Length: 280
Image 1 (cartoon, rainbow, N blue to C red):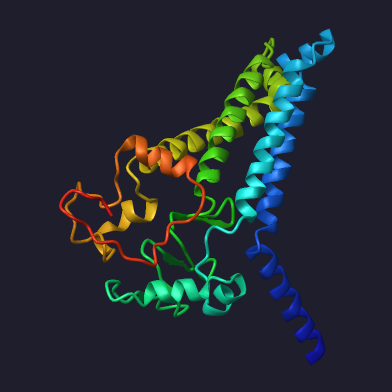
Image 2 (image 1 turned 90 degrees about the vertical axis):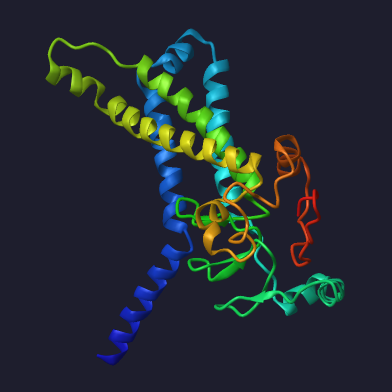
């Protein structure tokens, strides 16, 4: 009896760990994507009519765009968002001596320790309660990705949103092109049921992704993260700044250039001093 209870408990823990690992979320995203894609391809839509005429360019481009969006989804979902390394992890990467010497500089104040994992937090880092780790330049934890968005994957998250929005808007147009008339409402719903369901799902996701993309592009343009924007009154290095003051803002063009074109991580372990006119 006891062995049976232990086995059930192990199965429950295994199921919870699978859910926490994001397998179900990622599988749901993939299955839903391909169900909608097949629905659009199998009904009498513009894509189907192009196939029947032998014009395969548009169906192929749409298929490649969907594949690209799925690949970007998995890349951002599985990518290290910029977890703060422990001393042992820094030593493995060979960066421990450089980091220690930088932290030990007299001009550098002592770094804040995380109250959960007890690691020294660089500026702009935050502990994620879901991932159980501190993330460099933390933006937010995305439940649809089942991963944090931080310093290392934030730009790819924005690129993914852009590609996803293009795929959704195109799918919206394709779904609308396949809606056929019916003599009665009942017949019309029966003929277009699957397309209407796909249209509803695609429409909702289009609005959500559009809003997310606009918000992130705005925050990127002012060099601010979602966490900093929402919680600046509680963040030690921002709560003493004015409502319109952002110590990381270098102007729209420089902010966008740094975000999209500059590869590598910023050494936030070093707390920068602000002069009269120089940003952090």
